[in-house]
Image 1 (cartoon, rainbow, N blue to C red):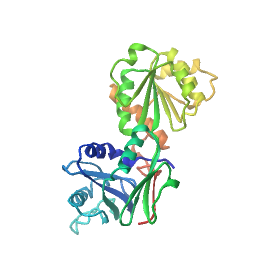
Image 2: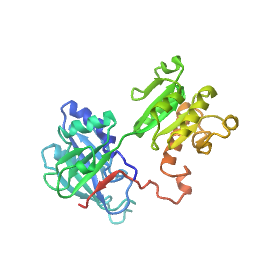
Image 3: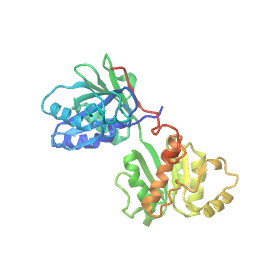
Image 4: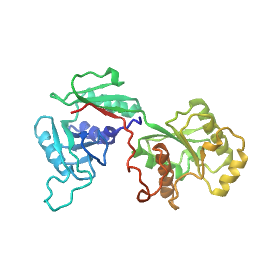
Length: 335
């Protein structure tokens, strides 16, 4: 089971308003009869100033959610509600594909200490189980794991996992573009480069950890998990080749290296006989035909997401599999 962090998608918005003293209402998708574009646990956060983040569908029910959130912000109690996309259409109008009934829990955002616990867990990259009851008083609770959670009766639990680590070898302009795009993908980005002037470029987001070190030595000291990925971007064989060997000797689930097909062919000749060399993906990325650093970063990250979801990265119109991967880190009892 792949654990997700759908609550984490909107939490920076929730926390920013919390720090300013503005109340926020949360709408959480806790049940559904039929297909949908968002997973269980999908959350929409609506602040008292009218701004909002997140969604529960592809746009079919968000207008009704905004109305319900306003009522909660005006003092209405938390409650469960049912919504059906397209229920207000005229008889001859076609209903949307996601026409199943949605069961949505409307509550104020949790107060402290639950709010502080969620904020700290996301900031410190620590796992946290978050539960909200599905019966009055719709209480929130948190614990390091699901077994430590308290609360009887039906409830909805989401496990906020540690972020997947993305190790970028080479502090290049492309690495900076990858690091920026990796932020909304909830990656913990580490950039490794032994060259002092490369790591001081200032191009990387504050969320990235920049380390001046030989990548192979850093990987040897810190190790890699199967949920981690390594993308090698320095274009310097003196840096790249030892990093590849170290990554292949570790447990990283995805290892990719930048370069043309000719460059990669030479690389494979140099690394012939290296254990696990068949795990190396090169040239890195999907075939998007992009040229700019942003386009190339999109290609590299698209391949990473496809590999993690067990997909080939083909055009959706040419495939027959469900559009969305079915694994999820949310668990719910029946409403």
